[in-house]
Image (cartoon, rainbow, N blue to C red; front, side, top):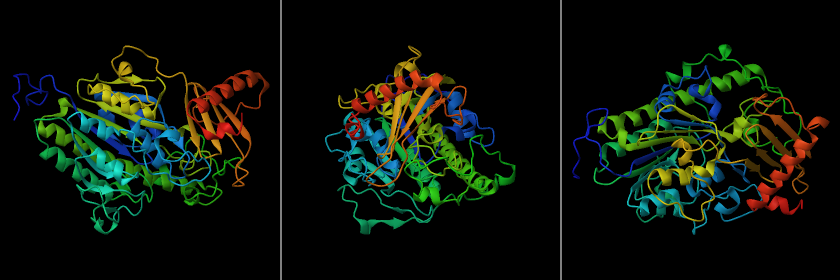
Length: 468
């Protein structure tokens, strides 16, 4: 046991003097930023997320970088684990294969590995969806480890922690609990048993609210589909072929999209989120009960967002804000309370931000830029632009107000359309009015197009090599 000073935390427990904070990094699957009450959605009930926002820091313009696989969660989770863009984080740079490129480059230091090397106890729970070797070098322990993408939430095949790092297929088993409960219980068990003499890095990755959206009671009955409002950009069909119109995600509802079907999907989606919110509340409660909430930075984010009827789409394989904009909330460890940050940041910035907040130096290879100075209130500027990609058919650039999406026909795959969209996201947050064809915006569109080319060049995007 380490000695503690006489200062007490908010719950009367002694505070750790001059120590690095614990980190609890929670990552959801398919949770778009706009589906949290604290971010402005009055219909979804999220008291835990709202509390974390009220007591901490909440970013409102956090964008994923996307990736070149239909399973967008693979490259976006790689971005969190490495702090490196999608063309340099994994073992392939192909833009047209569509294969989920799960293997992280072994020369990259993962986020868990960085904390482990700094003396943290590292523990991984839930969905990894990258290679087993990178998991093994990240964590000293773990529970209910899932290397797959998704599936029936009561039939998820998980591993116990394997100190050899092999995690053989035959060692997998079905726990039987709903995935949200299984992963939350494992996180709570770790917190209750964590040693006091050294800080910990706890990674908890849920498969919710990813489909199949089958919430348990009472959350399954919490939302009446008939009373839910459809978003302003809900349409029966997308206006053109965006290069990914027949993916599995898009087949979850019939074309054209019927309003009743979308409302049913939303009710189930909100039910999954409410369950997730409730169980994350138990994780926060466990920190309170241990008396370590003040010493712990709780981080909530997601791998990406999702459409569910917006723009006539169902999945995440697109560049609209509902799919590329994610929640990013931090609370505890001496961070300010109820601080809203509107500066543009990229998902790869999470890695160096957590490193700096914990007193670590991020590896030189990391592409991300720490947002710690934003959190401390030392600046209100971060990035001039953020960009995102999807396979060889979609590219996006945004400066926080103006957003250009460039669609490209893939001759190799015979899909996609050569078209551009330009949105004023401040005046038109639902992205319903395409300004790209108006002569008054020709110069602005060209400026954004040039900035997109530069962003692609800076990130080693192979698609640019075919254009210039």
